[in-house]
Image 1 (cartoon, rainbow, N blue to C red):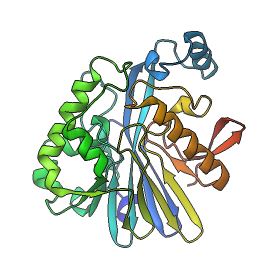
Image 2: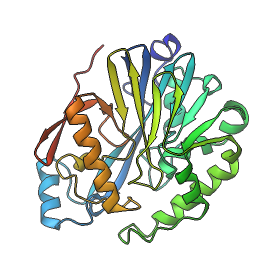
Image 3: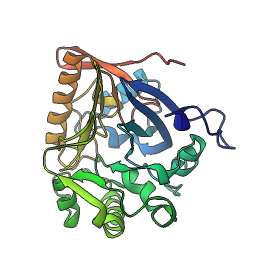
Length: 304
C-alpha cells in the first residue's frame, strides 16, 4: 500500500493530513476524514431526559446546542484488491459546510479511484453514498465493472422507504436520505452485488449485516493472522458507549438499533479487538471496555 500510505501531498487548505494508516496483519487500512457534520444536540438522544443529555455534553466538554459528528471512511487493501468502505458526504453542502472533503482527501492520500476494485456500503444514507454521487466520479474514475457490495435488505428498503418506525427524525432527513438513495440506485444499481447475511469481499474482509441503524446496516470485519478489526459504520455514535440505550434521531428502528449496538459492544469488549467507526473522533481507532451495562471507548495510541 505504499502508493496510499507514503505518497500524496496534503491538500492546500489542510494544516495536517486527515488520514491515518495502520495494518491488520497483512491487510492495509487507511482511515480518511471527510470532515465534520454539525447537528443539533437534541438529535443525539431522543428518548433521554434533556437534563441527562445536557449533563453528558457538559462532561464531554461539548456545547449544549450543537455538536460536530466526525465523518470517517476507510480504504482497505487485501489480496491485491483495493476496497473503499463508504464514501462520505462527497462534496460540501450548505447544511454541512465542514464536511464533503472526500475527493480532496483521497487525492491528498494518493488514492486514485481508478485503482479501486470494490466498494462496500455499510448503508445508503447520504453521508455514506455521497462520494459516489460527486460529478465525474462515475464517468471518469469509478469503472462500471467495479462491484458495490451491500445488504439485500438495504437495497430493498430504499426501493420503497418507510420511516414510520422513528417519529423523532428531523423533518428534513427523510427527503434528503430518499433523494440521495434514489440517485445512488439510479446511477449504480447495476453494479450492486447484494448479500443476505454476510459476504467475503477479499481475503480477510467480511461484511456482515446487523440491521438496527437501517434495515440493512452492515459492519465490516477484518482478520489476518492473529489480528482483527471491526468497522462499525453507524452502529455506535459518541454517546453510544456511556449510554448505549439512547436512541439517536437518525436510526430507522431505534429499539433494534440499541439492541444491535449493545450486542456489538459486548462482543468487542470480550474479544478486545480494535474498532473504527464512521462518527467517532478521527481516526476513531480504539477498543471497548465494559463495566456491567456501561461501556467505555479507549482510544488507541497513535503509531508513526
